[in-house]
Amino acid sequence: MARFHLEAGAEIETVTPDELHDYFEGARNAERQRARGIKFRRLPPINGLVTASGIAIGGDSVGTPGQSTTQLGPSGGHLWVPRLISVNGLASGATPDVLNMQIFGAADSDFSWWQFNGNNFAYTFGKNEIWLEAGEYLSFTSQGAVTAAVGTRIRVRGMLQQVPIELAAELV
Image (cartoon, helix red, strand yellow):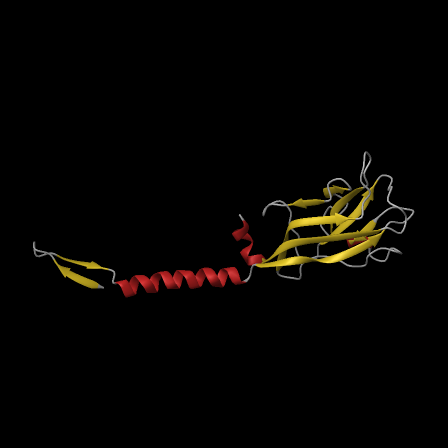
């Protein structure tokens, strides 16, 4: 601490420039350490084919003939927070193909969390809208009649944040 002698005879202590620098450098280093765990990633691509029975990609469709066997979800100790998901290959028009997004492995896996269609094929999400925990996977299934031709490739792509579970509060 730097000391100054005042005319009234009182002494005060102040922070030296070096001490102030050290304090802020320590705070910056702590913030860097915390941020190291948060990663921006591209959603691993998954594909599916339109079949006579519709479209089923990922999650609970694993093992369905002609469909993707990719399970898209975070590893243990992490959350995935989708920021953008895009689905290409759906038919557009007055009655577009509709694809529901489920989170397979969650307590209510048959619940649809979002819906894509051939006219609105990409959506962005805020940081507290949708997340996946370890053991959960994205799944996409068609709703209603599919007008895209049988054999049409449906592609799902996206961007996400991967966050260690202990940093989940940073998303608030």
